[in-house]
Length: 163
Image (tube, rainbow, N blue to C red):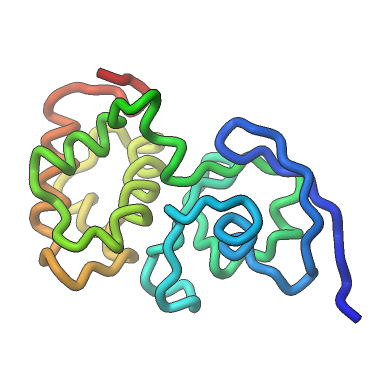
């Protein structure tokens, strides 16, 4: 018999009441119960960063957080970035700088960048490299990702502005 809990969580601005098993991760609930498959799963040990989401404004590895821990929180996934088909400035900066190749890692990077720029809107290149070092990319070598964030910061676009 599995222990089931009812949680209420605000996901991408929408209140959700969900029955979750005590052992379910937030990543599994987002993907399987809510159909938000932009949150990617790779290592499932919190090492790669592919599953990074924003919980109450902070970057969180959703593969490490139990869904019951999200009760009463505000969760934002990569699906929250674009509005009405218009890319978020972070996404646009990544596109313009050819930041990703296969893009499997992109959702985790995008959410990490979003959280970073909330705290530090003008990071140095070294700060960017340090902050993004917790996300793994097997394709790019990171330079184009860092270049994309630098271009966004240099363009004076606010992370909440939409073109």
